[in-house]
Length: 509
Image (tube, rainbow, N blue to C red; front, side, top):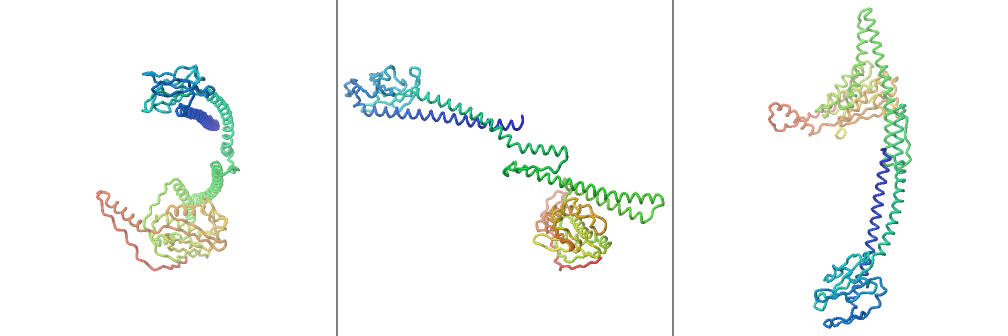
């Protein structure tokens, strides 16, 4: 059963239940209202008879001890309301008088209610094959004893006829409403599911033809279906973008791997023919190092995607990790005669993973060196901004155009590999790794740049707080005492390092 059929059945069933419930409610309410109306008329008639009985002309001679004489009525002979007056003679009740329209029924209209002391006793009885509504009121003497009963009744034939006509009308309307509900439900289900069918068709075309440029149009409101279409279009944009980057990446990686592999094979052939020499060994080492760096970056990104890379923060000094990263990049800067300078260093303690932070800074500093011409400068500063440490790497390189800035941290994205000043383009992975490391620490990285002037990358990392120090101290105490399983009092947090004056280091390479 298709979803459209199920929706049609659900909508039609719901409308059918509503129509049947509404029709039954109208029918019952109408019948109840008519019966209540008849009850009110019967009750008024019985009360009037009880109140005006000394003046009603009923030719009935009453017992002398009651002292009441009633004469013959004329007003009841043409009335639709049947009336019976019963009096008690000893232990039984006898009919004293009845209206002419009920004279054919000598028995009590409601035998169970004769002699009932309760006022306003209603009932429904069958007389001569038809339903009648009855009302019984007691007749009491001066002492409050029940001496008789006044029973009035009216036929429910008119109500039954009206109810039958109403029922037929409701059934006819219900059938028409149900038929219309099925048609409307079918149309509504088709209209509501049309965007989903379009979505299915688009997905089928994509699966069959790899057409990632497919987009769906939506003219309706921004409801659930509108949001679904919007999400689908955004997903397709992202898939197309990723697919394009992947194709570009495969091309670039293939080229990057093929070049050093070709060189290494050539040097091996030379060494096999003429023997090993230092120049060939150095060239092969450089090629293998480049391939190793590419593979390591790819492995780390892949592990980061599925959560295989863990960050183990600890208390580290910002100046130590920054100087370590600068020392690692010193040979690269010297090779290009670039001035690597530490301009401002504020002593700060970070709560971060030292190895990952070092890797982040190596990527950012290396990016600055790569796109800075010979004789340029790469400057590193460290300072506190609120509760974060800002490590800023500024170069005097070629800069980045404004249209490329939003995508500079995208994986595999390269602005223009031909503009690298050292002739060795990267893989477009370094800045992606840097952003992942910064965000994994709860920090961030951003860039400001101007073409022909240079770029400035700002890395924000969390500064160690007292709770971080207590956590590290508690972890160390737990590990130290874990073999004996003896609880130890909380260890005092490590003291803050002595404040040192700000350093202004200028290191020229």
